Amino acid sequence: MTEKSDFTYSVLLPVYHKDKPEYLKIAVDSMLAQTIPPEEILIAVDGPINDDLRGVIEDYRKNYGKLFTVHYFETGRGLGSVLRDTLPLCRNEFIARMDADDYSEPARIERQAEMFRKFPELKVVGCNVDEFEDNITQTVAHVVMPETSKEISNFARRRNPIRHPTTLFKKSEIIAAGNYKA
Image 1 (cartoon, rainbow, N blue to C red):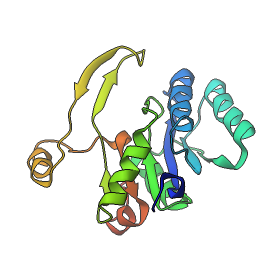
Image 2: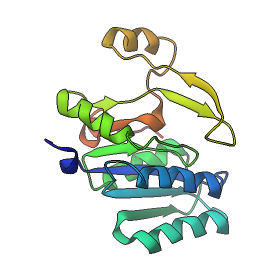
Image 3: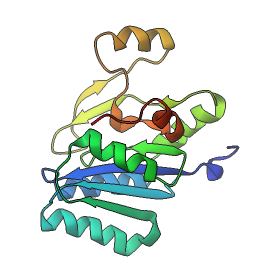
Image 4: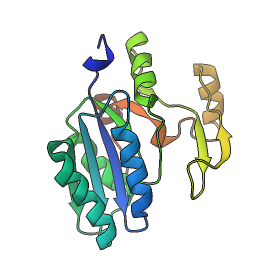
């Protein structure tokens, strides 16, 4: 990985019946707008969804072809199970996580890929979070996540030190650590 054009990754994005179609569009569009675009967006559908959500997903698949991989699970299985079963199906070693109600700034992946370039021993990279409700332009909280090993260890005693939908990680490392749990 020498330049940003050499960096390939998949986006793993679960969807379930309570997700809102308009938020899913924001999430997907924010990944399509990345300064380093994804090589794959894998949407994992956890059980039955309404026609509006299905329509959004099928429109992306129709308009973007092989960029989108969609896995439909007939019954709701829960986030851990869906991620455990679809993570190994991602085409790339680097996986960016997103949820269907998230938004990523356009340079998110570029900045995270740069960290992997500078520090190839890293296994996962996260970032700070701006939380919003209903409108991505109206931030309700800015959450600064720990950055150093010591800060991460101390924070992990109380809470998860990495916001899951901000992560970019190495697929092989997550699988080697036991993958997601159901």
